[in-house]
Length: 232
Image (cartoon, rainbow, N blue to C red; front, side, top):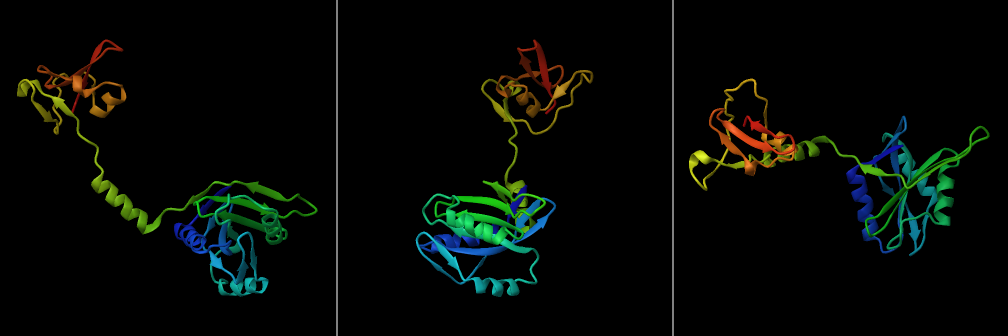
């Protein structure tokens, strides 16, 4: 079962969890499609809360159903907090999950102020099939849209693969230079490698020697007993 939650929805829930000194709960919309679920919203209901319980006004559920009638998805996500306690399913939690899911299904989430979460899926049974229960589901944050595109753009602009700095004997003893341009290998039959390929082979560019005849760098491969030539 693949379940995701929109980042703004989780941020909204965690804001309320941090703000409320007691337990807090609400409902949300879920788009259910061929074994995949996406939590798209989170809403608060009229409720009375204590340090260890949260009681939702049943009549207010109808109000929320009406107000969200045009939103895509089903109002089958029940979420609540455990304040500073661990995230687990209490007897009261299980009773609420069954109340929401016995005649269909319920996706439940519990959060705490330690930024922990736990999700479970319950589907009521019938005379043809037994109830279904899946606990400790790994729910991922859905990333996408223009925000991620801008993140990718900034990453591509700022994060570069370093060009190796190699010892160049032609520049004299102790001189170093950065190799930027590829040098043509005069021995076309010889296999050449990029610096990254040489690094992947476990070879170090710091031990490279300049091959005057081939006009390229070479590194001795002690594992195979051959020279590896670099075309960069």
